[in-house]
Length: 456
Ligand code: SF4
Image (cartoon, rainbow, N blue to C red):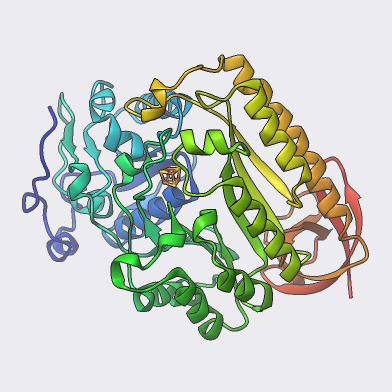
């Protein structure tokens, strides 16, 4: 069933523009569904922009689509299941549409998706940025056509941005990962680490700014690894953005602790462009577990990074990822994680329950943690996170901050974020939309973890 990439069979963009009937698609309305991470959202936006150039338009709510595009995630079993459900629901809602499925689940398990009646085309990670070109030859058929590449051949990359929200835009600067942590399938789904050059990435950032973006959020799978294939570094990219994007905001996504250098911390502490907002994956606070997971650091290095950040920039926001219940995590080892995180001066935890992924090395490790114990541990971490976040927010009362307000009107309120990622509300005021405004932080709203503010 798995057909290799048939490059050359699909039409070129030049010919697409001439094809006024959009190739084999008669109804030019498209429905998009994106599951998973911010990276997927950026990629769906880029696919949407290309399809728009070809004459497709996003279907309005309730409108019948001629094309359905589903960008999938495969981070857990539950994610796989949700993808299958979403695909089935969309096929039912749009019975005459051609259905295209891409993303991590499509790359890892194309056969599972092809087994869903009504799917026409499955596009792997290497082919994703050419999805629009495949669409022009697409015919409805009994069996799905699969275009995926082997892991070693997944090399395609170009920097892209999300485009739905003018205020905050996700800029994909890197893809893939060489780390092969023992619980993770992302390198199998997205291939090895790669990125564009600093010049190409800056150009894409400037294009997003021309479209109205005020804050760029740098995303990827392992963004600290940016530039390695080009003889450049992530620090150099940040330095360039710091010089070239004065007056704008750049927020850095998750950076592996071993790749978070002291010069990067210094720059993020001092720059007015690169925000003092750190997102660092810890995954476990037990050195034994970090070894089982094949992580590239120990708890000493992690603690050192957090202390360095706080010594240079006491108000910096530090978000930390943790996975609860990976195979091998005894009660005692989980206790080490809780103890470490309780002591650490961090702002928020992103706690996940472990989910087995087929083909990963950690499946051989004992003991296997019962699923309900994984969820209980995750809940303990979530409660700890709420305490940390509340303490971090409360410490900001009375401080003044620059807040970039967004556009949505939530029952007469407007929301935005400070430089150090505190969510702030303000009475709705059209003059504040998409603008940065200096405010004094007032009180803490427990219901939705938001700080009140007064304009100063
Ligand atoms: S660094 Fe992240 S993406 Fe890479 S293998 Fe480890 S967990 Fe997966």
